[in-house]
Image (tube, rainbow, N blue to C red; front, side, top):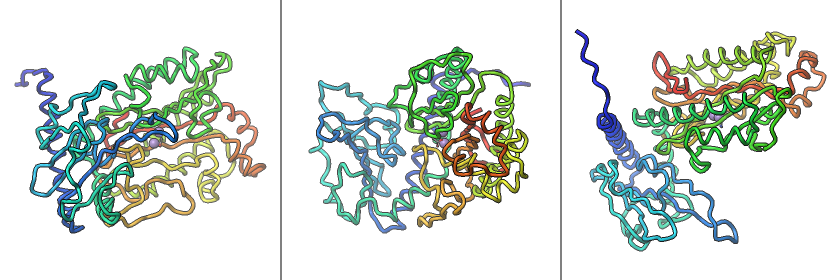
Amino acid sequence: MRPAHKPETINTVTEKFMGLFQQHIDHLVQVTTAALADTHYDGLWIYSGHPENNFLDDMAPPHSINPHFKWWVPVPNVTSSVIHFVPGHKPKVYLHQPADFWHKVVDNSQDKWTQYFDVEVIGHYNQLPDFAAYKNHAWIGSKELQPLSAQDTNPDAIINHLHFSRIQKTEYEVHCIAEANQSALKGHHAAQEAFYAGASEYEIHMAYLQACQHNEYQMPYGNIVALNENPAVLHYQYQSRERVATDQLKSFLIDAGASYKGYAADITRTYAYQPGRFAEMIKMMDEKQQMLCQKAVTGQDYVALHELAHLSISELLCEFEVINCSAQTAVESGLSQTFFPHGLGHYLGLQVHDVSGHVIDRQGTVKSPPKAYPFLRLTDHLRENAVITIEPGVYFIPMLLAEIAKHKDVNWQKVTELLPFGGIRIEDNVVVKSTVPLNLSR
Ligand code: GLY
Ligand code: MN
Ligand code: MN
């Protein structure tokens, strides 16, 4: 007999979420205890950071919290707060909640996450403990506050250990990145509609923010919103206010994410305004990108996957008669790098380009990218539950094309036709699994 359908109530959703959070905290306790044991420290302070004013100014840029702090505390906008971790003790948070009539002070001290911590609300810095009085502790935090000796401040041995642990995500972290993806996809849908309605880059950007209910400060990185030839600028940031006449509109690339409890999404889509060869090229790129996503399984060598991306993109260039040589020759001669000059992707998590991409063990042993691919951000084999991006692209970048001017294997007539379209990038966020990867962006 089929079990009666029981709709999920808000309570059961919250309970599930808190169950995941508890497992996450248990995991952090375990990995941090191991990191301290291996590095012979008795305890750890983690500082959230606080805003620092701009040069000769009384204004500060938006605060970017210490990722180690938000790994534990799921409130990405607290400042001047400290976590104290000693193995065997409940982690403690000194949570800064000042009496302040200039700003809204959000009271996080009663949130559900606090049940896993000993929370002490402090109204002023002078209520923070005397950090140096605790023997054999290390401190993780940026330059705003460094109360311990240089040797015990961000010690490489601890940072390497913890960064390596951050590669493989807990179920809670995957849930957060999935939620960030859901918000981002709402933005992408709105952006697509705005593009086909003839909106400017700036208007598309605003439609994106509105749909995912983020302000600029909550975005994990600056939106890349690029019409026509602008996708050829890889990190195009300009956001023109000018609308392009619809009879001139050709292409649209948007690379934009969202955040959820401090975790990032990082998604790119490309559209053609009219059906035709460029639209067909996008379709083929999408198929190749999906094939690459399917290979994000445990043990896959990411450098080899990047090389496969080069081969796939070269096949596309052959298919659309942009190059005259074989795909294999385009990869081996380096020609494909003119059209695909960045890496296939990176780790994703608390940071957009999450840590440890060039590291292969807890000791921080570096595996540099091969000489041929200096911009590759991930060089290790893939580990289960790592979250990565898969973001192949093909671009028509005047500066790079000028470097190979008159190259005999390039069909320059086709290049001239494609320059006004800028390029294509398609990017998904994928959880590495042993057999079938989990794509969070589809
Ligand atoms: N949005 C930056 C990147 O894709 O890496
Ligand atoms: Mn990316
Ligand atoms: Mn991106």
